[in-house]
Length: 563
RNA sequence: UACCCCGUGGUGUAAUUGGCAACACAGCUGGUUUUGGUCCAGCCAUUCAAGGUUCGAGUCCUUGCGGGGUAGCCA
Image (cartoon, rainbow, N blue to C red; front, side):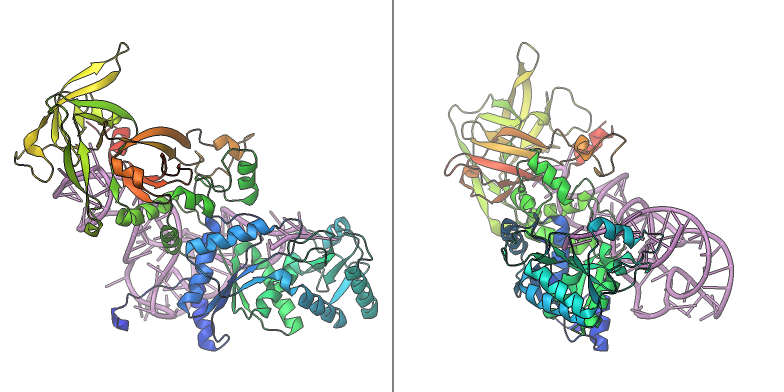
């Protein structure tokens, strides 16, 4: 494809910065990294960062590393490392090299000694509470630590003894010597090392001092030759410190660029909130299909493509915005519409009997698997005189614009015939338990010689051939647009949707029994569904609803426009 | 009330870097359709405010207003 044929793609501010730095020669190439802390599961917000970092590297023929920011042994576990790697791969990315910040502990230590030697760091005996007091506040400057002027030999000696384990947890720290009066609190002699006796998931008990984020992150970037260190907005105030360390050490100096993290309506993606939902049993684990974790979306049936498209769609900027969750839902719909084969299943059945159907006759009708993708072929669906249709597709009396089946009316059965309803059977309470119809033999789908036109087409299943299915109808977990924004006296738990999961027995056309775990299909007129891992081997299928189809009729009726 | 960042339709992102505000989603109207799905067409903003620079400002300057972030030995 020639350049002139390509659509001019607008670049986001990060891409523009990269372009400028490449043009000016500040960097020769694009090296990025995705740096999760292994203390939880990845969520949809991480997907944005993953797509950004890996995507930028890809577009610029650069590299993107996976680096675990594992500097806090108290919170981190190998279990999370595994799940994070699995999720990144599922999303469709592969890192150029795998690293752990803990691999750099020795180098970090050496560099710390170097800063002590140049008079840029000192050992401080203030407790954490005292450190906080000395730090001052947002509006008032801090004051110098009484230990700030220790000699270099003394600092070196103390720091070595810290490493050797001579001091108690929290009794000393190593701090950068910058400026206690800086308006940027991060520059008020930030802590570089804390004494902490905890078993690290990788280094075990080898260390009793651990480097802090600020002292680790930029240096790790530097070691890996990262050119663009992309992070979220809350680190903006840390950038001067990031730069300070690189300059003092005189090492490769990456450029930190901050962007706004993803925020989606109706979602809670904070780690502590998700943890509460899992630990207190409001959902069934981290991969519950209602969870905004990547493992949750995977199990829900979302495709990696749809999540990547979504991330590309929402763009990258510095403005804190909230994306309407509908965009994510639309993204899966769009993808699945193209690829998911169509099937028929009835989830809230009512009997429909064809009174003029030849006794015992089975008619096979051809149905297109996917009108968007003729290559997916056709299948045969058996039809008998005993059918099941969706309860909401029948009304005894219906508004003018109700195009489905009503008493005295006609409707087309998808991949079947036109039927005319002449009667209904009710139980003692007046509930409709059976709908009686005749069928018109001249109206067979694909071979209609009648010329009849009917307004509506509904789906159905032959009761004699139906495959029983366990169907999990998932809906949004929260009823509120912003569950974090709670009213007086309430917590986000008060906004949980009682109806976020409904389990029903569905009746599907025969071939639904053949689908394998992970297969995604469209139940015509209902939505997209995926075969869940809980399905019995060779037995009953469990289907998760991924997302419903757009429901124009439902909206019309809700707005009173059905008449 | 210190410092930093951000303000473009209902929502989100653009605007060839100072030259007629574009794209997508949502919404509304209509059309096609054997899925009330898909698809197609149309409608929907003088860019937070006020000054200033300029032939010309969404873009630059000043002030104001609004929103977000920051006081872990968390990341």
